[in-house]
Image 1 (tube, rainbow, N blue to C red):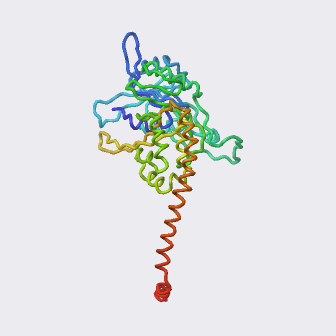
Image 2: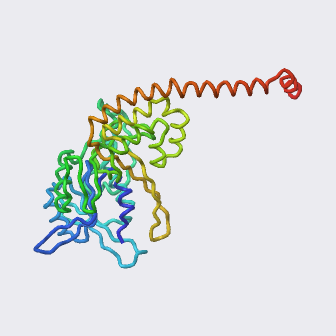
Image 3: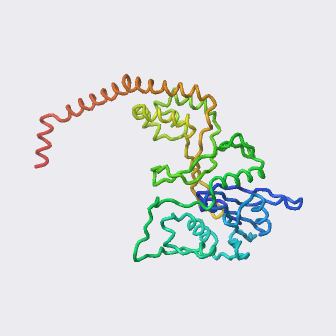
Length: 353
């Protein structure tokens, strides 16, 4: 049985389409999995001719296409047979360890341009195997960005292909960056950026469709304006630690409170949702999904409230937060002064002796 969750983990930089319908000679076929992204269009099918017809229908060029054919086994404990189609040789390449080789194949197409001279990929099959970077006596000079990954598929071409797949899935577009899926879910198109740990480098890594929260974005903006200074919006998103931090610091001195409102106004406010899924073998997998707020409809009102939030933050800090911190400081000082008396200090010195 095709392990969809594992495939999605492998193709982490791509957008996934499930069961895309295609009509061939008045018969409807389902394309089980399609991944779209700058590092290639990955199509998984049970029949080669169906996959080739689908690729032609959505207009994928041979140099952008990675077509995998699998033979699904009836018994779930038996791994499916996988083959990689080579369009140059017009033949199927058998894969011995399918999912491991798929991951290697995917990662080999994400090697930065500066590192490519250290690898040897003479044909498509060579991408299925891990390689040890070659060492040169003289280092090859590279003047560009060492993290730059040359896209296999131009960004505009990725969007065109995704639009074609959306047409097959009958997914109506609200705008170029907003769409509704067949089950009524609203999704927004966002630029993905490279992250190193928790630091966002702002380096573009392509685009991806993300699910939007079900709540009304304008109502949540108002909720944040009135209660965000004490972290109510963080508690609403089940970010308890952040909520407590906002509560104790009045939104980090009002700065993070204002920044959250600004992020919502720009349409970039998101929340990470973590779920745990048990597979057929009993293993538990942790999955994280980034969910964005829907774009605001009343942007003029939001701009006015953003300006007012700065005033609210200043008032809260000056008349509430600052006196509160002063009071806490005085109480602690009083407690410490009572504890550190001359007798207590002498006793402490005697203990040290």
